[in-house]
Length: 302
Image (cartoon, rainbow, N blue to C red; front, top):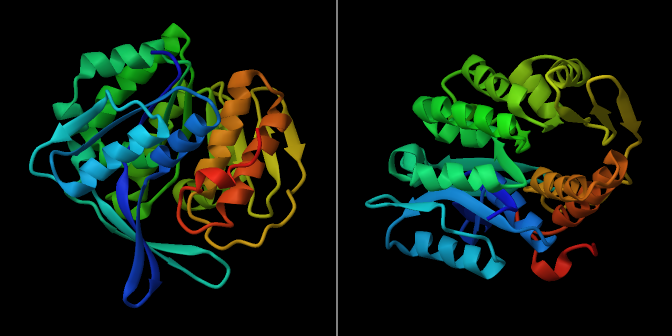
């Protein structure tokens, strides 16, 4: 199989355009990154769970096919439908989310998926990708199983990339979310850490958390609020100046686009600063469009 294997959730996205209007799409943090990695030329397989026969699950599978994303690791959960979220935006394009996802099929992934196929695909991958949202929705038993898989992948030399992407509403407590994130950090080769996550999840300054996590061997991208980025390695820090400001229409999915652009460059062997610029270029396009996923024609040139 090779390519990128990712574990996450795809939901129904309602993009609010007024009190009685909304556009319907399909998105999720890991899924968004998968779409962009595929458009950048990577082979991508998305491990998830969807419903069985409902129109929303069918639409998600059709979108995966249209984008060229492998669905062979997408389990079907009878009697469940995908989670749903609605996005509000302010005048600056900053967003506020409302979720309905308690019965989301992906919560059953480790109970209903073909785990032998999942582990086999991950072992053959050039990269395994997940997020803090993944850790939240798969539950305690899923996290325990996943930790063993990540340890196995690290032993076999398969790199894992991780975005903490903290969503407080998905967790019983901040402490549990932090413990879950820090349990996977030792097995990660790349961690994309925003200032917001450092403050809200870790309750610590961005650079302090990035330095601590880099000691486990990860390359930690510390993404500051002023748009500067410090790349923390085990022995050194590379500081990159802020990118040019872009007028944002909708910031949904910006981090997912950045991660895809960076990881594509990193997998090609680009210098970290070159990979960061690729991530920034993609994120700059994402924020100028409504919804988490760009129209394909708006993708920046590779």
